[in-house]
Image (cartoon, rainbow, N blue to C red; front, side):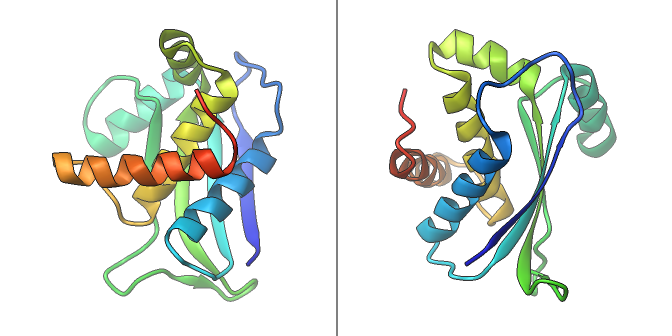
Length: 156
């Protein structure tokens, strides 16, 4: 299994003290392990500020406010598309507001590494078809996220 990460940091307000691309790759690999998917995969992750994620929410979701993360799954009713150049399944796009992530890490009293990993894992499971509209869905999705973080040794 090979993970292809397309990463872009389009904000200049928050500086990270860890390797974001490596974290994305490890989270993606562990999310696929959790789902028993043994195929190569690609994911696009973009870090933005609150202003940009607010604009994306207005454009794509119809509400004008900041959120911590947006997920744009690539799968269809026919499953995942495969990139013919690398034979990897295309998971989709993740957009994370690092400003919001920083505020949440302070609010919850844990590291920026932990908050960023949580948001990546959370969004990956959206890309893999999970949601949290019901209590049962939320429980299942959050257990999967925690499993990923535990395997990576990222705790509160």
